[in-house]
Length: 485
Ligand SMILES: Cc1cc2nc3c(=O)[nH]c(=O)nc-3n(C[C@H](O)[C@H](O)[C@H](O)COP(=O)(O)OP(=O)(O)OC[C@H]3O[C@@H](n4cnc5c(N)ncnc54)[C@H](O)[C@@H]3O)c2cc1C
Image 1: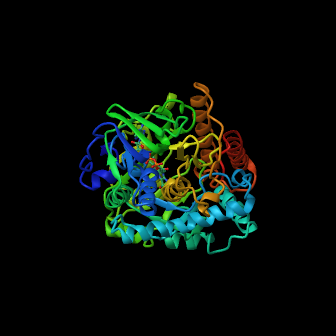
Image 2: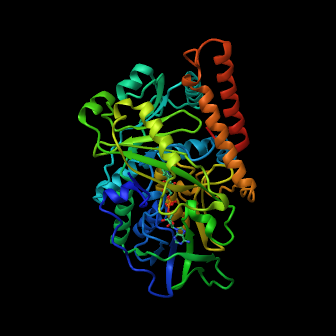
Image 3: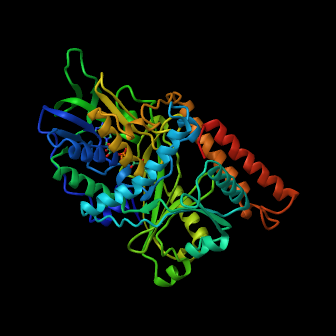
């Protein structure tokens, strides 16, 4: 099994991409974007489309798509990156949250459109998203979620409830008791998407400098001097500087407690034999997750593998970052166990590769797109694991904000959203470790396997008490962390 090497997705493309040059020296630009992931690349792509005359420079510490954008689960999902209630506190209220949801759903099609017009071959298939309940308690949560969805007026075109049989007819997840199907979701090969956006931005005249970490970002001075991104090769002075570093943000001066770098880990099998696929189904290439507190997410890859991810080690002390995506053996064992439990037909398939990466989590779990025309600084991120579609919408929004004309996107409630900072260490580390220990315990207690009497849904008795405790612990975890569900 390969481990690390950034991700399977890059290695499946034949290894790391050819390196672009580093910043040749100090330069002046109209727009300087720090970070060459989806957020930075989409922002550059759309800005260059809106104002072809702008000199737009992207500074990337490693290579375009090195971060989460080249490592993720490939879910282009319209899932809201944050809490509806918290976004509804913006002046646009509940209507604003509805608009954000609709914009995210439209974003899935926008990504498909750009892939088509820019000939980005990234295995884009809009097969929808299937969230599967595999325990009675997960089913209760799913039904509660559905009730909330209906209450706010969203119908089957947004989320459709599937019975256990209907769920298994799509994807034969063992023990599926029901599912929630959302049509607005696509599957992609993440690194291919990142490479494709970078190339499309370059065709529009964007300059991408790799192996060029920004050591500091400074606001515009008085008297009209631009903002600055400092690097060891020289400064980039620009009309504005946009920080698009999501999970890596903590390493920048002044940002240590802004976004918590949360780990997510993945494994991928070798291609499954056709007999296994006959057993599993999954012909629609839906993105699939379960309803556990410490949930798993999965996709069927274009070459017939299962790629599956989950939390594993959630966070490293003092916001430390993985080394090239190397994953610890216990997480690989844990994810392999989940894979084999949910997809027994894939139980004998060897695990080909494991890797991990970081995503940015704000203290209130709500993403932000922001630009200050006085300091000439902007940033977007904090998508809490739902960043593939959100980064496209954020990029289009940042482009509008920089240009400064009022648009529908610039009025969305995540624009200018502020979250408080994370607690200092060691409280931050202890809090995240404690939270995920709690979630793991809650999942175990809710699981039928934990009930020797043969089913967590059994009425009363020790099994019933255990399930009740599991649910209660999950709710305590949600209340402490502020994680929206
Ligand atoms: C394993 C994993 C699975 C995930 N699965 C999904 C999924 O299926 N669906 C989903 O919606 N979301 C998923 N996410 C989250 C999603 O991938 C991210 O939210 C999204 O890619 C963030 O894009 P970004 O451009 O903001 O950040 P990144 O892609 O992390 O890009 C930031 C870039 O900035 C660079 N950088 C950092 N510091 C500096 C600096 N000082 N100077 C210059 N450059 C710098 C980094 O090298 C990096 O390339 C997942 C994340 C992970 C880690």
